[in-house]
Length: 432
Ligand code: ADP
Ligand code: AMP
Image 1: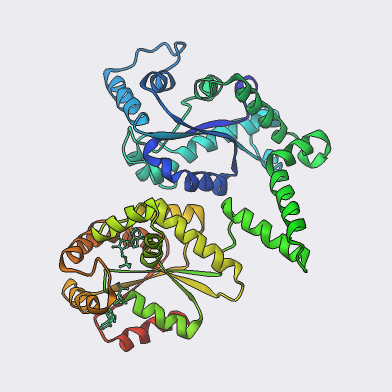
Image 2: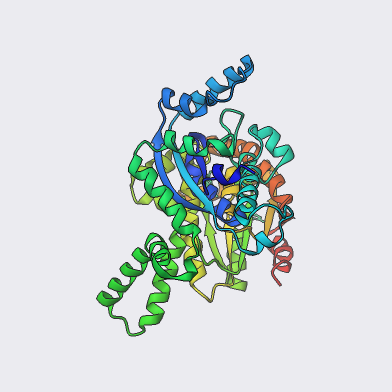
């Protein structure tokens, strides 16, 4: 058994440039599915030299790489240098019960844990080629966040024995490396036992938030201090991805003009759901006249999809608001997810929606409705040219989402060419 000397107690993950904006969903997914928690992270831009050093096999690995491997390696180097990457050190808080059920009776608990942790980590990352990952390990990080072999979403050490040297290639600052080892050690100890381990753990996790919360409490001096503190901490936690969400989440999809907004308004009136339209959130953002607003404005005029992370962040905030309003029975999420990455990231960061309404309507009828709407809507995209682009985006980008959702939840296809009343008569049945 060599594990004892080689397992450093953590793994390294590099979230590559093509997945950089999806780093929060990636880390939330790793935490939720297998308990991997962050020990340290850092944003970097790789130079070709540094990227090559990271990706090249160690001199100890004696086999000469095949020409194909070398070509792939160079493509991978180029991919890593395309923008910002996030380097993350993660460790897994192993529940003690796991040690009991392991089969290798000769190994010590530490050896058993390290072997399982590493195996689980490799399974979570999945095969290096995302196409292969999608076929063989559809829930792996590369299947969900990778594009192609070089743009595979995430990189990790190829072997457990390399983690330590890889860490030095990722973090040049020796003090930071020391701090990482210290944090891994501290979190690995029996925190519940109290003493200095507990102190260190608390100071690296909740102490700062708690101290801020208490000083804010003193400033606010609210009449109900405990309730106030509870709400403050809930909001702080939700910002870190542990949002309290409304009881029911329903995706509402369909082509532009299919009648999503119209049917949602009826559901709000009858069932008290909140209606959150991705398009409305984005249009409200344009009004702020921020740089982000200008980008959104242009994309909406072009009938294109606004980058997923922008839409998701606006939506997340709304859903957290709804979740903290106890009377809200659920939220109708209108016009989201419109692209595959949005569907995946939503589920990683928040949770799976309960079901999806999909309004089916012909292009001719949708166009007729949109042109009619344009007389009063004042929308910059209700014109023949934008409408044509929106139809194309819908077919190319949103239709694959329907197929994806159909594998994950109930998608109710609603024929939407009938009158508003007829369509609603069918829709409301799903909420009774
Ligand atoms: P979406 O939210 O899917 O873009 P809307 O709900 O805004 O679509 O509807 C687009 C236009 O079509 C609106 O002017 C609306 O009044 C009209 N409309 C909606 N549903 C119907 C329907 N079933 N029959 C006729 N017109 C409709
Ligand atoms: P809608 O109001 O639903 O018709 O949306 C209008 C426009 O907003 C779309 O054509 C897109 O440009 C943008 N948009 C709406 N929802 C999304 C989304 N989920 N993701 C990205 N862009 C969106």
